[in-house]
Structures are given as C-alpha cells and as structure tokens.
Image (cartoon, rainbow over all chains, first blue to last red):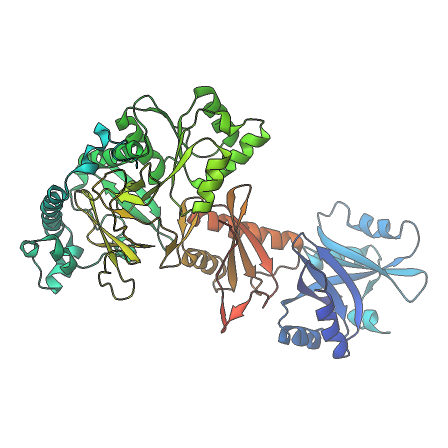
Length: 143
Length: 438
C-alpha cells in the first residue's frame, strides 16, 4: 500500500520549479500529484508520477538531486469531517505525520490525502483496521 | 616634518644607530641559531642537510644560508615539536587555527613574555601613547594572542588598561564613554561596527576623548583608515603581528602613518620572491620572511609569513632607525582573515569531508554587514545531504554550521544550493567570493 514519491531539491528563487517540470514534460511523464515545501533558501518539490524510476533517471541525468520516499495515499469522503475521520483513526497511536498534502479525485465525492509517516507500516495497519480506504499505486495512477 | 617629536623613553630602542643595531642583530642571530640547532630536531636536521653548523653564521648576510620554516612545519610538529626549551621553562601557550583541523601552538618563556610586552609597549609609544592613557583592549582574550598581547604591552607602558575583550558592543561603547577611554585596540572591522552601534545609541564617537586606535589582526586599507578617522576623533594606526612570531607587536605604524616599523632588534625581516625564495632587491615587493632573534621557547628561523609587502627605502620622518614595510594588503596563499581569525578553505573542506564522507562543491562567500564580517558557505546538495523534509534539511545545515564553528572558531552560515549552481572555471569551482568592500 506504499507509494513511491519523488522529491526534488529546488532553490527558492523564480524559475527553479520550471526546469524539473519541463524535463518530465519533455519525456512524457505525467505528474499525478504535486506539492511544494518551502524554506527560506530552498524548497522541496514532491511529486507522484506515472513511472517514478524513469522520472528519477531523467531528473538525475539533468543534474537534479532526487530522493524516492514512501508515502501512503488515503481516500476520504470530500465532505466536512473527512479529514478528521482519518486523523481520528491515528489518535493516541503516537504515529507521527512528517507532512501531508491533499488533492481532489476524479470521483466528485472523494479526495485523496498523501501522507508521509515516520512509520508507514504502523500507519497502514492502523488505518486499515479502522476501515479507511488506502489506494495502491495502480489505482492512484490509473487515469 | 615630525622629526623625533614622537621620541619617548619607551621608544629608545627604535632609534639606535644602524651599526649598533646590526651588531646586536648578528649577536642575537648567532645565539638563536645555536639554540635552535641544539634543541629543535627539525632545525638541526635541515641545517645538517645543507652542511651548515651554527658556527657558519658569521654575518647577517649568512642568514640566507638558513632553511625556511613554513606554517605546515608547525602543524607537522603539533603540539610541542618546535619548542627549544624544557616544558618547565614555558610559562604560556597560545594557539591559532592551522590549515586543517588542528591548531598551531606557540609558547613563551618568561623572557619571551617580557620581549612581547616591550614590543607592544613600543608599539603604543610609536602611536603617541604613554602613561596616563586609558587603553581599552577589545581584542579577544584567550588562546588568540591579540587580547593578552595588547594587555601586557599597555600595562608595561604604564597606561590604564580596560580589558573588555571582544563582543558586547553596547557595553564597550558605554564604558568607553564613561571611563574616557583614550585609545582602543581591536580589529578595524570591529571598530567600524562600534562606530555604527554608537551612532544608533545616540553617542557621537567624535565627541569622545578617544585619540588613537591601534588596529590589526587583519588587512585593511587607506580607505578604511579615512572612514574611521572621519567618523571618530582618533588617529588609526596599523599594528602587525602573527602568533607564530610572537603575536601583535612585530611591527607598527608611527605617527607618520607611512609604513610599519618592524622591531628588528627582535624580528629580523627579509623580503623574498614567493616562488624562488630568493631575496628581492631592496624596495621591491615580495613575501615577508621573519626570524625571531631573541625568542627562547619557540624560535623560528626564516619563517615564511605568506604576507606580501616591500621595504620602504627612505628614512621615516619620525627618525626611527628601524626599517619600515608597506602595509600588508594581500597574501600569497589562500588564507582568509575573518574578524581577525585566520581561516583556510582547506579547513572548510575538512569539515565537509568529516560530516559527509565525500566533498561536495562548495563556495565561501564573505560579506560585511554593519561593519562585521559574515561568512557563508554554500554547499551543493548531495544525495547524502538531501533529506525529504525541510526539518531534515535544516538539521543538516545546523550540523554543518556547528561543525564548522568548532573548527574555525567563527560563526558560519550554511546554505544548501542546487547541484551545479556554483560557478566553475575550467572545471574547478571558485572557492572564495570576497564581497567585503574595503
């Protein structure tokens, strides 16, 4: 149930996000989900792409620093309380969320949350026990 | 023409006739060479390699037969390998940064400390200071030679010493104003910082009784002198020294402010071609080489300072017989001086290697903010360095900054940058960008 996400180190300056995106576009790689974390001097561009091994190769060949990280994709109801239900399932477990981002799904009543957990296996077990729907890589990327 | 107007008893030795001085120099050179040969294996073996015995030094010209000593000799014999006296005779140790992780160590006997105090006292005297002056010493006290060196010299002069050490600038300025400090010793950039701070505290430096600033431990320019003198009421003097030789007090400007007199009864100066090591014709630019003529604990023969200068060939208007060198503006190695601390890019490399295991491309950027030198090290992010979270990256920056600070003794800001963003020329990155304007 773990999904591989690519993180790219980018400088926090105008124009620096374009280069990696263009490199992937030129290679026909689709960006399924995207988020940007920013610090003062630099940012981390995180993305879930159709073929991460290929994408990583393309980016590294162009000189980008790339890191593959395992994340968990959670499907939630796109209504008030959807997110709270997921977090509620983790309450009291001590499982830490390092970061997360959300994006809407094709299905109008659903949204997807991408989580980076300190301990993904423990988080997966807990969420599944709570009956929360986790998406496999194929489902997430199918479009 | 000032002509001897600055003569004072403390300065008597600066005015001895040349032939007397030269006799004294030869006698002392013969003694120090014998002492070094006898007690320091490195000097003995190097002299033997050249078939040279102490008895072979018959005139000052013979000094050219002696082998050079270089900074790495001090590192290679760390910590006590160049000491020429037993440890029981060593009463003080100081240390400064070496070219890599380990510092270089220097030592003093009681007699060495007396010499040091006397040359610093002569330095102050040359700047027109005397008993009754209140001298604030804002060089760092500790292993760095600046603070204690200036301190003992000022006491020997009979002045009142205010040992504030470096830092806590607002308090420095308050004391300066309340005590009526008449002379300040610090790095010129620290004084620039004081001028700025005083201004924002509503204190006009020009109205204080300050009349002399004795600035050293880093190169500075005529432009800085003009700026300092225009923004305070003091005369700014350049003092030269290096811990390997003794600390501050190797040479100093007199009131003529036209070159630095070298106290050559204790430190014999030569100017050599930095490439060939051959003596330069009198007056031509080259590397300053110094021999300690009277030091006991750690004599150095023909020490390559890496500082570029030239002798003045004319007699100074002050009447001193001891020679002058041009103020030092550049070096013939890659040493940087930041807030008076000596730093080599190789030290930065050693830290990056230790923390990371491999050497990433890096660049040192020096700037000056509010009169204070700032050092930033930009590091191209490597796979080892790249963490997927901002907190992870920030922790890495902190870890590198702390490791740098431990080795360099200077605060360093680490900035991670994208791969291949640091400019290369012919495949090699330019290691240092110095944006500190003079």
